Length: 256
Ligand code: CAA
Image 1 (cartoon, protein in one colour):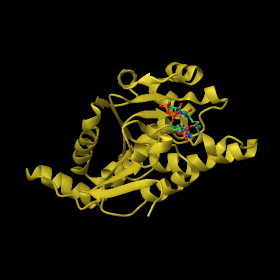
Image 2: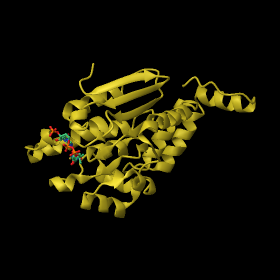
Image 3: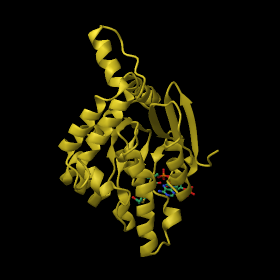
Image 4: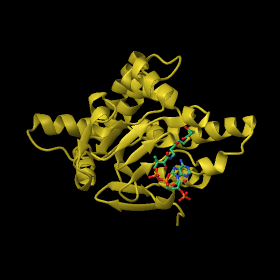
């Protein structure tokens, strides 16, 4: 169904694997379109785990072969389309996306991990924004999201030097939540996903909206939190969660 993705829905988790191993899973236009559609696939999944195929790369960036002869206007359109179709779509998705970073996460690859809600890395992963070594800058949100995540000084160093950091350093910098041996990467992502799935999906969606509000221009995050908090009181999940607590039983959330 897709030329560049493999996907599978198992136990309420949608696994999406970017599958261009010969090109180190670089993001060409078609892969971005396919991801846009796959991420928004309707189904009974409650969490998405996003990874790259093979043992070498998560994603080695935007596809350099595709944009090498672009004009100024084409360059602008590449960044705009990518941000709208993929990176903003992930960040604002109603369910959590866990990036399982299984190797190189460079340029657009690190930007993909940054747009995801949670990042886990295998111990061989190398992360970086090497765009200035190509005479360009990160265009898929990296200048914004990396600075938010690790602070402006560290982001500047990574962007200006174009150097990669190891998974261990990424953990120290707060860029990834966990580092595990490669063979344990998906199991670790799954264990976090399973923990998420036990909770109320509507509350998690509200939490995504509220947390994201902090990063949106002109939006008061505290007001957004108050609004989303209030909305939860009108949901069946809230009734079920509080009733279960008061009756000392496990909740079975209806998800609405
Ligand atoms: N785009 C297109 N093809 C890529 C690619 C990319 N980003 N990264 C790797 N490839 C291809 C290589 O061209 C090579 O293909 P061929 O066999 O057809 O030559 C294949 O993947 C294997 O790569 P290497 O032979 O280079 O593998 P290596 O082990 O020697 O090096 C690497 C691995 C250090 C990751 C190196 O491939 C590399 O530096 N890749 C580019 C990383 C990069 O600069 N990413 C940023 C892209 S720009 C961007 O993302 C802009 C944006 O923000 C919007």
